[in-house]
Length: 266
Image 1 (cartoon, helix red, strand yellow):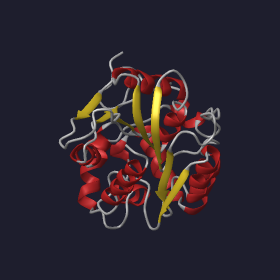
Image 2: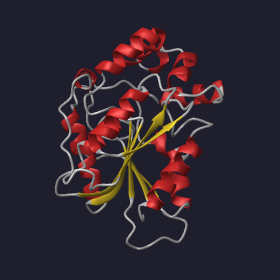
Image 3: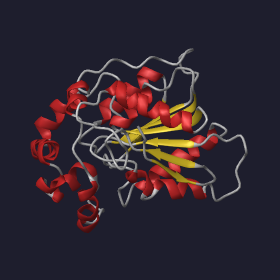
Image 4: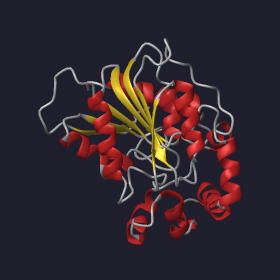
């Protein structure tokens, strides 16, 4: 099974030993979410950047219909093998949980950034929060899952993923690229198997970053993830869920990630 692996070569001088970055997308999308802003920006900063589309997403082969968390973890490990087995891993939303399950094993993750990430315990609490405080978003996500992007209202999806500064036209341009997600993973994410901890705890540099205006992964989930991994935490006041695509927040998020990586010697 061939997986789509987008690539942006470093365009700035960088240390030969610097590991490449592998970006992992979340639900309902593909590697393209990283290609809009993040990949060229990180390449300009001296990082070779790659983004994988999980099976059945983007231009990857395979079927997503009944894909499980274990299947997606296998896809990311295959992409890591393609990069030589070592990387800096950056995962967003569901991709953040997939990344958490790739932090141990024979491959070498040298640092990880968990962005607006599903926490180790899953989305049960977040789903309850969403149904109580944003029921219209909950409905539109159900329509997206059942019928695809043509069935959803772009204004509601805009509120679910973006800040008010992101133009409606931008959302309308991006929305047709979204897709349905595995029904199995949607159920599994409510109460997934907990990821194993890198040992000794705290030995792997991990940054948990997200916004306090995120209606899909509320800030309490960010605190849980940071506590679980003994990781550093950056909560961005006013930031939404779709940090890598948002007009106002992508560069702020990218710069904070780059500054953190530099502080860790990468």
